[in-house]
Image (tube, rainbow, N blue to C red; front, top):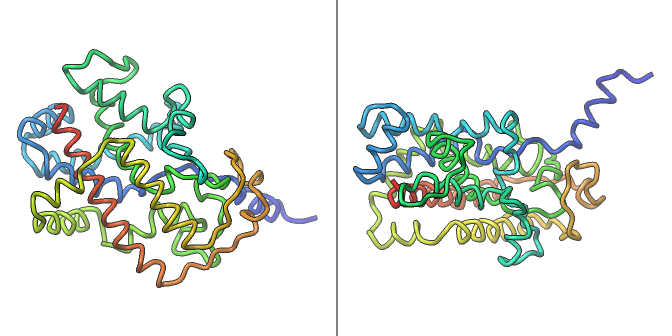
Length: 293
């Protein structure tokens, strides 16, 4: 008889792990960038919601901590689906509504929590406080900039493609984009955010405005296109028929049998892509908060 672990471990590998975009470090980097670009009025309101001193360092630290709260409570609050939009490879922008039934996706929740924090808008989700709304908003805007949180190819957003060999603690494609690509950019969120903010400081006003432009649907569509070009096509992952999975054991055979070998060239080429997505997310989050607080 085979040992129990020998039976269980392969089976567990077929289950798509919970989607956690950008890892804690990525979310905190984005929050720190946003904090550095708040207007005085927004900085004061954020400090009040987070119950910290109205000064940049205190707000940056508190907002970075708040940025990971939504992942910590998603099981108990049954909000797992709020962290992504399952837009398929063959979908167009017109399919966003189809993939967000009952407002059960990141796009809709960004809109709803933006409305809640906007004092001029009466639309409020009474289940969550304004502090909760801020914490969700900071987190979900970041999620929408992780390409595999807005793209699926009958593969649970990249969770079903195995890396061979694994890279650090990333055993599948989604985990590679969630954490490894960020961890290679800097030793921690404080250092990486400072590095990216230094780059932002060297930009012209027009360059910063361009990076922060668009609305939430524009941002999600941009990230979706990035996934198609920089993940699926770049890695020669075959396009699959439309399907949305709850278990990688239901993935097409072509997906289950993939053993992706990620070379140093790919990791190097993706670094500027990830840096720009983190920068855009931080500036866009700041613009959003400045407009409503």
